[in-house]
Amino acid sequence: MDLKANEQEVAKWAARHAQTLGFSGSSIEAAYIWNPGGFVNQSYRLTDGETVRHLKLAKEDKAPELRQWARISGCLSDRYRAPRLVQEVAQEIVPGYTCGLVFEYLKGEPLSTAPDPLSVIEKVLPLISRLHADEQIRQAVPGTPEMQTLTYSDAFIQEYIGRFEEDLEGIKAGRQLLSFVSDTTMEWFDAEVGRLKKLVEEHPSFRKQAADIVHNDLNWQNILVGEHGEHWMIDWDDLSVAGDAAMDYSVLLWPLYRTADWPVWQERVSRLAGEDAAERMEIYFRAKLLDDVIDVLADYVEAEQIPDVKEVTQERARNIHLRAYPEYLKLYGT
Image (cartoon, rainbow, N blue to C red; front, side, top):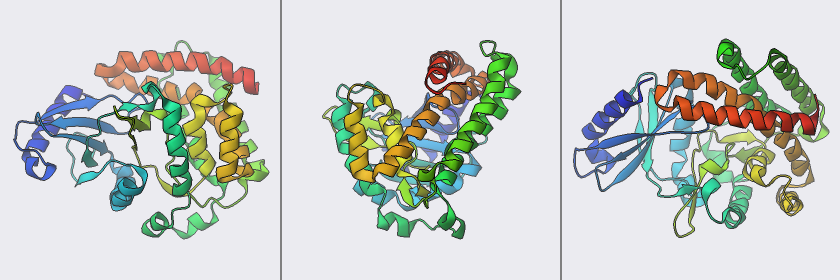
């Protein structure tokens, strides 16, 4: 993947659509935004020197999620501090990416580097609690008959087990790149994913219907904080009306798990979502740590095809894996 060539194509496209994008001139610059979480989508910062826009591009299999986001974007902006939609994209601007969305650019830093993240989380918690039961969104997002039979177990398997299985296919295909991963560890991956799936399938708190409206990816990179303390939640393309509130709470509160103040946050979740959700959250934390063990290796392999960000992505992935793997074994055994 040639990111420089992609930036040039994006800039040309933006120049052709300058008026509808809100630019005053046709001299547009496009800069690729590196996402430390992977390469499923691509994002670019567009500017004419005055106005700034954010372009998110996706492959065809993600088109339904982007169209869903566009359909409810007004509600998400008004009620949940999501970025405001400027334009939908229904063409291939860069190779392989056939759809996208353009948003107003939010000038902020990720919650992970904000000076006072806890004060922001205090504001986000009631927002996502309201989201989980938002009937306006439920009516706007068409469900399917199958969704009415999904359980929390199904939601977990769809979100994590499916991801792990897909990751492992890529990891095995790029096995020769992962010299720091032993053959024994590779075998352990498959076995542990199977154990986690069995645990969730048999756990009583996962047997109820999954009917929560969830963001599904509220990690600290997807919460931006402005210079005056304002905040926004981004990346709504994984929103589901048949999800598990425990998923949102676990991802949001993951950096606080097992800290001295964790019992306080755990109690907050119990009050907002019930004790069953707090119980499921503990298993989601286990999956989140396993994600740091496995998913980053898939990023490591995929980065081989993107020279511009290969080194920084692979160094990050290797460090996370080597930290998370022994921690996982210590907490959950073999």
